[in-house]
Length: 239
Ligand code: PEP
Image (cartoon, rainbow, N blue to C red; front, side, top):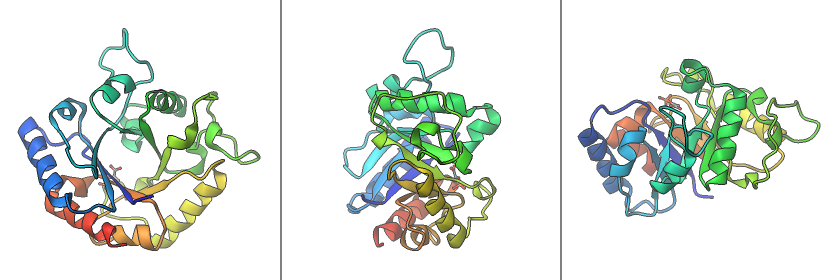
């Protein structure tokens, strides 16, 4: 698998023009980098105006609802995202757990909804107990999900995002991240890709792939600076 870099723009930028500008700068900057897959996850309302004609730049979303349509004010469904051309969706980001009080049970329903529509869910966790039971090895610590999805779970991607490292400028050490990656893999019932997220920048990105053996990165702050983000992608592509 090529290294996967997910750009989480969070609640930025504040205008459509800025979003287009940032997206187009990234598109131009990474055009010639073929061995790394980049996924931009902008706020929902910008998605339909961002078009990627290059195969190494994909679109994703920062969340999705578990129902497909109906009386659910303010929600965006996985079906809507699929119809807009999204291929990935971040689920269970710590900021949603904190500010929207998202619970594991809600997060697991969102994963199932994303899989049903062929989106690749990126499940963010900062501890082993957040791995749902349907992804856990038998005999491991039990998750709290009541779900038993019939869909193949091969499409799930795990992002290890330690809370202390998100948006703080204090990245997790390579040694600790490496240990956590192995612990996550030991608890999974299949060999899913594991990404690292938390204060990744153009300088430290490569080490998480090369030394800690993550299959990719989830990048917040740095993804809002086109030049730094392109540099980060280039550095990762040289691993
Ligand atoms: C994130 O949004 O998931 C994240 C890791 O943010 P940052 O890169 O800013 O720490």
